[in-house]
Length: 127
Image 1 (cartoon, one colour):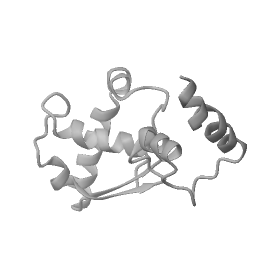
Image 2 (cartoon, helix red, strand yellow):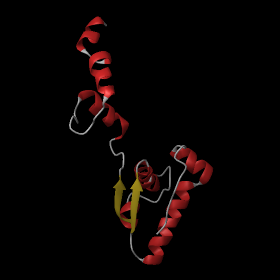
Image 3 (cartoon, one colour):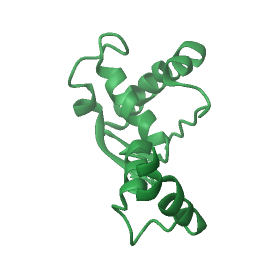
Image 4 (tube, one colour):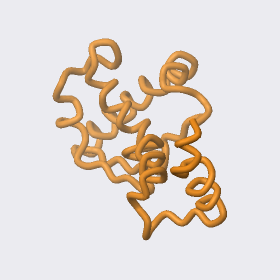
Protein backbone atom coordinates (compact mmCIF):
# COMPACT_ATOMS: atom_id res chain seq x y z
CA UNK A 1 0.00 0.00 0.00
CA UNK A 2 1.40 3.36 -0.97
CA UNK A 3 -0.28 6.70 -0.31
CA UNK A 4 0.53 9.48 -2.76
CA UNK A 5 -0.78 12.62 -1.12
CA UNK A 6 -0.23 15.95 -2.85
CA UNK A 7 -0.66 19.66 -2.26
CA UNK A 8 -4.10 20.28 -3.75
CA UNK A 9 -3.42 24.01 -3.98
CA UNK A 10 -0.86 23.46 -6.74
CA UNK A 11 -1.38 22.61 -10.37
CA UNK A 12 0.11 19.46 -11.88
CA UNK A 13 2.98 21.27 -13.61
CA UNK A 14 4.01 22.97 -10.38
CA UNK A 15 3.83 19.68 -8.47
CA UNK A 16 6.18 18.10 -10.99
CA UNK A 17 8.55 21.06 -11.21
CA UNK A 18 8.75 21.75 -7.49
CA UNK A 19 8.39 18.25 -6.02
CA UNK A 20 9.04 15.84 -8.93
CA UNK A 21 5.68 14.44 -7.83
CA UNK A 22 4.81 12.51 -10.97
CA UNK A 23 8.37 11.31 -11.54
CA UNK A 24 8.46 9.89 -8.02
CA UNK A 25 5.00 8.32 -8.37
CA UNK A 26 6.05 6.75 -11.66
CA UNK A 27 9.20 5.26 -10.12
CA UNK A 28 7.34 4.04 -7.05
CA UNK A 29 4.64 2.41 -9.17
CA UNK A 30 7.22 0.66 -11.36
CA UNK A 31 9.12 -0.52 -8.26
CA UNK A 32 5.95 -1.88 -6.62
CA UNK A 33 4.97 -3.73 -9.79
CA UNK A 34 8.50 -5.17 -10.15
CA UNK A 35 8.64 -6.33 -6.50
CA UNK A 36 5.13 -7.81 -6.29
CA UNK A 37 4.84 -9.08 -9.84
CA UNK A 38 1.32 -7.70 -9.95
CA UNK A 39 -0.13 -4.60 -11.55
CA UNK A 40 -1.00 -1.67 -9.30
CA UNK A 41 -4.50 -0.71 -8.20
CA UNK A 42 -5.12 3.02 -7.88
CA UNK A 43 -7.75 4.50 -5.58
CA UNK A 44 -8.44 8.22 -5.71
CA UNK A 45 -10.68 10.59 -3.82
CA UNK A 46 -12.29 13.82 -5.02
CA UNK A 47 -9.79 15.97 -6.95
CA UNK A 48 -7.28 13.13 -6.64
CA UNK A 49 -9.25 11.57 -9.49
CA UNK A 50 -8.12 14.41 -11.77
CA UNK A 51 -4.54 13.95 -10.58
CA UNK A 52 -4.71 10.21 -11.22
CA UNK A 53 -6.00 10.77 -14.75
CA UNK A 54 -3.31 13.40 -15.36
CA UNK A 55 -0.64 11.03 -14.04
CA UNK A 56 -1.72 8.23 -16.38
CA UNK A 57 -1.56 10.56 -19.39
CA UNK A 58 1.70 12.14 -18.16
CA UNK A 59 3.39 8.74 -17.74
CA UNK A 60 2.75 7.85 -21.38
CA UNK A 61 3.42 11.29 -22.87
CA UNK A 62 6.74 12.03 -24.60
CA UNK A 63 6.58 15.39 -22.80
CA UNK A 64 6.15 13.74 -19.39
CA UNK A 65 7.28 10.32 -18.20
CA UNK A 66 7.90 9.15 -21.77
CA UNK A 67 7.20 5.49 -20.94
CA UNK A 68 5.20 4.77 -24.09
CA UNK A 69 1.53 4.37 -24.91
CA UNK A 70 1.18 1.04 -23.13
CA UNK A 71 2.58 2.02 -19.72
CA UNK A 72 -0.83 2.15 -18.02
CA UNK A 73 -1.82 -1.17 -19.59
CA UNK A 74 1.38 -2.81 -18.31
CA UNK A 75 1.40 -1.30 -14.81
CA UNK A 76 -2.20 -0.56 -13.77
CA UNK A 77 -4.73 -3.29 -13.04
CA UNK A 78 -7.60 -0.98 -12.16
CA UNK A 79 -8.50 2.48 -10.92
CA UNK A 80 -11.27 3.27 -8.45
CA UNK A 81 -12.63 6.69 -7.64
CA UNK A 82 -14.35 7.77 -4.46
CA UNK A 83 -16.43 10.92 -4.97
CA UNK A 84 -14.35 11.74 -8.01
CA UNK A 85 -15.24 14.81 -10.00
CA UNK A 86 -15.18 13.10 -13.37
CA UNK A 87 -17.34 15.63 -15.19
CA UNK A 88 -16.10 18.55 -13.16
CA UNK A 89 -17.58 21.92 -12.33
CA UNK A 90 -18.90 22.64 -15.83
CA UNK A 91 -21.27 19.67 -15.54
CA UNK A 92 -22.36 20.71 -12.05
CA UNK A 93 -23.07 24.25 -13.25
CA UNK A 94 -25.09 23.13 -16.28
CA UNK A 95 -27.06 20.70 -14.12
CA UNK A 96 -27.76 23.46 -11.62
CA UNK A 97 -28.89 25.93 -14.25
CA UNK A 98 -30.88 23.52 -16.41
CA UNK A 99 -32.55 21.65 -13.57
CA UNK A 100 -31.22 18.41 -15.03
CA UNK A 101 -31.00 16.88 -11.54
CA UNK A 102 -34.16 18.18 -9.82
CA UNK A 103 -34.53 15.20 -7.52
CA UNK A 104 -30.89 15.30 -6.41
CA UNK A 105 -29.81 18.93 -6.31
CA UNK A 106 -31.61 20.80 -3.56
CA UNK A 107 -30.74 24.44 -3.51
CA UNK A 108 -32.99 25.68 -0.74
CA UNK A 109 -33.29 29.50 -0.67
CA UNK A 110 -30.77 29.78 -3.52
CA UNK A 111 -33.31 28.18 -5.86
CA UNK A 112 -35.75 31.08 -5.39
CA UNK A 113 -33.03 33.65 -5.98
CA UNK A 114 -31.94 31.94 -9.20
CA UNK A 115 -35.34 31.07 -10.65
CA UNK A 116 -37.21 34.24 -9.69
CA UNK A 117 -34.43 36.76 -9.96
CA UNK A 118 -31.27 36.02 -11.85
CA UNK A 119 -32.64 33.54 -14.42
CA UNK A 120 -36.32 34.46 -14.53
CA UNK A 121 -38.11 35.12 -17.82
CA UNK A 122 -39.06 38.62 -16.70
CA UNK A 123 -35.45 39.47 -15.85
CA UNK A 124 -34.28 38.16 -19.22
CA UNK A 125 -36.89 40.21 -21.11
CA UNK A 126 -35.59 43.41 -19.47
CA UNK A 127 -32.09 42.79 -20.78
